[in-house]
Amino acid sequence: MIHFVGAGPGAPDLITVRGARLLTMADVVIYAGSLVNPEVLALCSPYCEIHDSAGMTLEETVEVMREANDAGKDCVRLHTGDPALYGAIAEQMVELDRLGISYDVVPGVSSLFGAAAVLGTELTQPGVSQSLIITRAEGRTPVPEAEQLQLLASHQATMALFLSAGLLDQVQEELLAGGYEADTPAAIVYRATWPDEAVYRCTVGTLSECAREHEVSKTALIVIGDVLAKTGQRSKLYDPGFGHGYRSAKGGSTCA
Ligand code: SAH
Image (cartoon, rainbow, N blue to C red; front, side, top):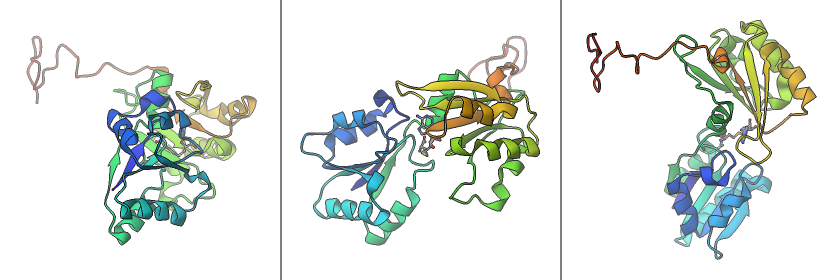
């Protein structure tokens, strides 16, 4: 059995209880050494066979999984953050399906939510933005035409950009061309939840300058949007005049 496990954004105690339990029981672990904090591997037993996938191809990774599975061993494939975001798990699942090997997925705390926590922000605030666009700049990996940044920017919703810290000249240009005002708040969050984490607040108009000034070109998330200014209206959920299934309105009617 193969378990895809989210290791969390960096701090070793941000792995889930389920993920940690699977690591303690694993016979074989393949971890994404470029981003996963090796401190989480302290959970593994001394007999656990550990591979760093940073230098491995898809074929080599799947071969390790196949051998483990054939030997009746439990194998954890440890990905940074949550495996469902830019984790390249789909291609592994295709191969495992082809080989008839079963697997499951344990979610993790994405670096996006690590970054939101560090920023002390709510990404969806009433009256500001009720949507979050998760995307990336086009680099060597192509982005579908209909998802070009300029088009996504036209919504002026909260936006989080992965894998884009080294491409901020192009990102800034496209965000401005798409419709964000130059003074829209932005933040570059470097290595959220690691001991050397850093937050650089700027605006859409100063994004690339800010990254250059602080020499950030990787392992950072870019968060854009007016939610960073915390100017939202108060929510209906906790409004005394708004009732719902769990609480009656004080002097108002109850809505489902
Ligand atoms: N599955 C991961 C994302 C992997 S893609 C997740 O859910 O977080 C790798 C990209 O994630 C990096 O280029 C960077 O944009 C972002 N990233 C990963 N860890 C990060 C961290 N601790 N702080 C900021 N960004 C991070």
